[in-house]
Amino acid sequence: MLEEFAKKYHQWRRRTLPSAVADIEWRRAQIERTITKRFLPAASSPVRQRAIIDVFRLVEPKAFADFR
Image (cartoon, rainbow, N blue to C red):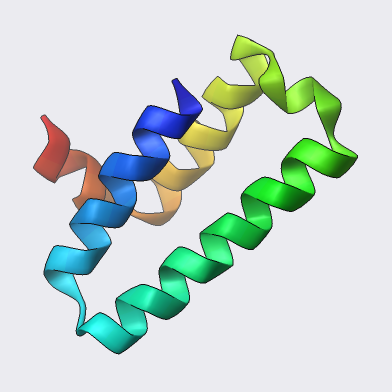
């Protein structure tokens, strides 16, 4: 669920931002996923994934509007 969301989110970011900024955003998200997987093993649980997605929903409401 989280990987699918991340892919859609970054596709949206690439469509709405200049490519250099989108590349930086994509790299930052890769680093965040690496940290989450390495240091927070509970992130693989659906509850943890839902919490992460809910944070993105608060931070980037426009992204969620585009996915509906």
